[in-house]
Amino acid sequence: MAILPILCYPDPRLHKVAKPVQAVDARVRALTADMLATMYEANGIGLAATQVDVHERIIVIDVSEERDQPLVLINPELVWTSEQRQLGDEGCLSVPGIYDSVERAEAVRARALDADGNVREIEAEGLLAVCIQHEMDHLLGKVFVEYLSPLKRGRIKTKMLKQQKQQAVRA
Ligand code: GNR
Ligand code: NI
Image 1 (spheres, rainbow, N blue to C red):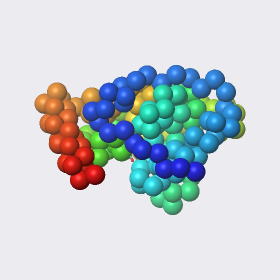
Image 2 (cartoon, rainbow, N blue to C red):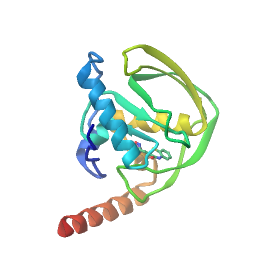
Image 3 (tube, rainbow, N blue to C red):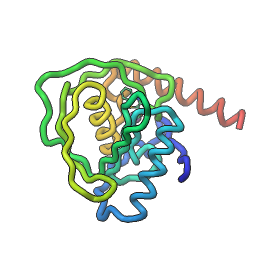
């Protein structure tokens, strides 16, 4: 298992659209294991392959308190979303230190392949529903800051670029 580097906003590679996985094989299983290790190491509740510069439709999630309920979603689709919306604070491992409010569907039903290549459906609400929507956005090249006002997004972009320049000097 390896910890993979996570792309940081405004890296243009975060806007690439992921392609469907053709076969859930050893390569894909190894990647999901690395993605889970990377997510746990970063204390995140989810990670999309896009964030580790792999542009395939793969997501890992664990919203459990104990960090022992890993979920692998390959080629995920939303088969149902509630009319009911919820407003919640979001953060992103690709936009470290930034948290802001985003409106999402309160509940969703997703269909995906698991790490064994079996079709699974999960119905989710609350934080898990938010996380699934946040990760599926990543696969479409969308980062949560794109829901914020252009003013806020501009400020976040400036702050991130400044941080990245500092890190480059220190490295
Ligand atoms: O770790 C994460 N926390 C989080 C909190 C609220 C809403 C969404 C998220 S996802 C984020 C991890 C991440 O960046 N996934 O893409
Ligand atoms: Ni994210």
